[in-house]
Amino acid sequence: MVYRYDSDEDAYVPYREDEPQGESPQSAPPPPAGPSPSRFPTPSLASPNQLLLPSAAPPQEPAPRYEMAPAAPAEPAPTVVAAAPSDPATPTAAPPPRRGGGRAWQVLIGSAAVLVLLGLLGLTAAALLDGRQLIGQQAAPSDATDTTRGTEPAQPSDLDSRDTDQAPLTAREVFPASTLTVGDGQTGYEVLRTQSSASCPVAATGEVAELLVRLGCNQVVRATLRAPDGDHLVTTGLFNLTDRSSAERARDQIRRLLDERQGRFRGMSADEGTEVLATAPARVGWQVRGHYIAYAVVARVDGATIRSGDTGVREILFDMLEQHLNQGVLELRAAGGTASQPTETPTDGTGNQDGNTEN
Image (tube, rainbow, N blue to C red):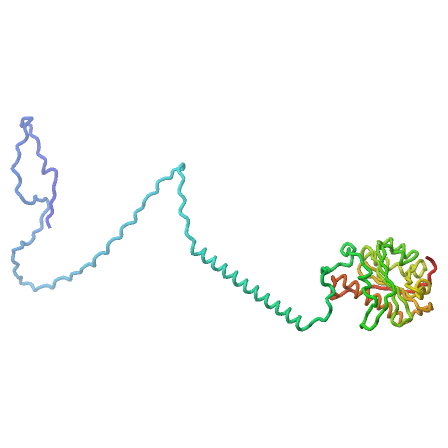
């Protein structure tokens, strides 16, 4: 290897004073061709054509040469570009929105699958419900005659107040046929006469009538019937009061008024032979259901006094008050035309009243 050192001193020629100005110094002869002489010692190298004679020294093994693995090409350094300061006056363009088309399709397909599943469940439930109703109808066929064809179905009514039970009673509703069948269906009461009046005193006298009017009674529907044994007559019906509280107050005071003979319930004569209902001693009973007071007056056809323990009279009172008026008429009204919902036990009372002493 040849080392060469060039210095500015080699090219500097001092200016001599004896040389005239304007004349350039005499140039030196050009240096010989070849490499410039170096100031540093040049190692002696063997000439290419020089022969090397073997020496007397034993030959030495050549030193092992280690070849270096080729260096991996250097990765180019990442180019860092400095962001130019943004001009606040110039609006910066918003980055393009990210595409979420794939996820939107997944949500849409999942929602459609849920809707299809819900629809299948609804159809299955409807089919099961229809099947159960059909099985119930086949298992329990009804032979009853449809008497409500062409009429609107009645709606359930709350009997605790006239505000929620506004439809007035009618004689046809309370006594729908000429023969009243109660209980086991074999007991028939012959209906002799019916009456519906907006004046409650037509069915009571004295302070009993005043009490009913004071507590808001605006209607009474009653009828006179002949008992199945033929020995008893009964006048029975319903008083229509304002609400349940008024009916209960009237019920609690009626017994005291009857015991003190301050009034009575009127029996209604129908034809010849039924006048005893208005004149003879009678056995009476009454009970409350909602804002109604059901009552019954029983008398013997021969006008004789009725003993307090007469079982036949007790059966007549039970048939009229409980089975017909409560479980029949008022139950149908409360249930909207179907006697299927349970009712609370009505509160009732019985007593005796003397023959008619006042008109």
